[in-house]
Image 1: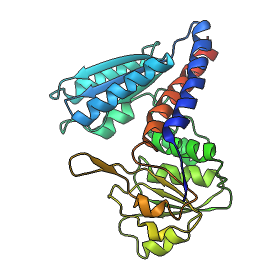
Image 2 (image 1 turned 30 degrees about the horizontal axis):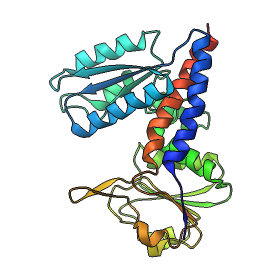
Image 3 (image 1 turned 90 degrees about the vertical axis):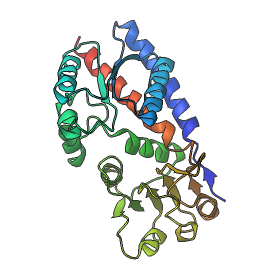
Length: 284
């Protein structure tokens, strides 16, 4: 039976280290600052924002929250982003997605300064990731890489199969694995012979957004499984993209859902904000 990769524990260790680094920066007169912008009343978004605020408080990062009504115009939101781009107290800007229909997400994300883009979605930061010289890396894939590192998984030369091709997880995590000298195959919901491709993988990263689509029987014995999916089944049950109970019998290590990748996403957002603040401190 595979060992559980405990995202909560890895995240807690990283946050403890970050808190001491924040204290060092504060002694130099710099408090890392994260601006979080929430437009509308999406329940899941409100939960995420409150978790981010709590995580900021735990590590000593200044959190500046902007809750805007659902009818906010694109021009009004762009005006706020411009103000935050020019605010010297703010090292990172996060606009919580999804946005209301009247607002173009791409236009908004592109308006954030690439040097405050702690979500790692600005074309500048995506391009830097593609060329192997990243500045800010997207938080969930970055968290996946930190989990593999903490578990002692050596990616060089390994076959990594990623199921999912989104700009948020699939594509960036593929680039990160390539940078770590893995051999990478990107699959998705329309890939033919998916069981065969998964069955060859030393590391499986599932981010397709379909409950238990990856069957445990497909997993190669001894493989490492990272399940990024979070799918609600019924009223309360959360499951990943991987059939966990069967997969854990074959994997050497596997992430649970919940408690796996989830805690790492917010941790890497804080990490990126702290790195941005270090850059500001070095220029003083």
